[in-house]
Image 1 (cartoon, rainbow, N blue to C red):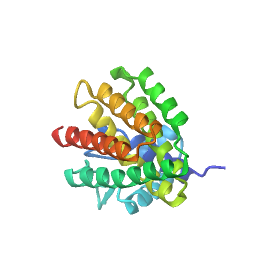
Image 2: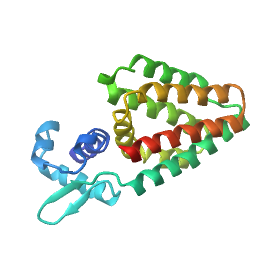
Image 3: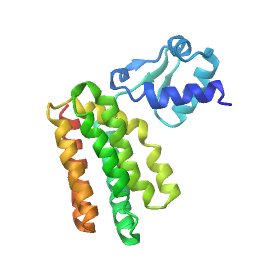
Length: 208
């Protein structure tokens, strides 16, 4: 049975912290406790854990603060993603394990959610698209490391999505390039497509 702390941790990390509107705000512990039906003690325990992961800042006498992603953090996030995803692309092509079906399924869901009112759902499927590639590489530690970036990736993804009016369409085109390169068994093209996609996202975020 899931504990109150686990429920609070999952909600804060996967839902609350992934909302760009929460950046630059202090977390109202009682509001979160009421929302998910636990006492404030599990909320505090979850916040200590999130602080250890550098996802919130605990400020004495003020509480837990959700700091906006800095330019440096965004650059480092995209650099790390690029290293992991390019490695995964090369690995799945070497082993014949490219997850084309899963990636195309995620992409199809994104096409269905391309209108602006479904931004969070669009980014959730964006994460599934990329994670399918990393997971298929067969390195569990690498997949766990990549999964640990999820809260930051979702926050960055939603911000990027609403920073430019045509970002939905650009993401779809960039994802098609990645899938096409994998389908063609072309590692160099896959690496270029992944780099172009992440560079595009980086430019949008730094300009927002």
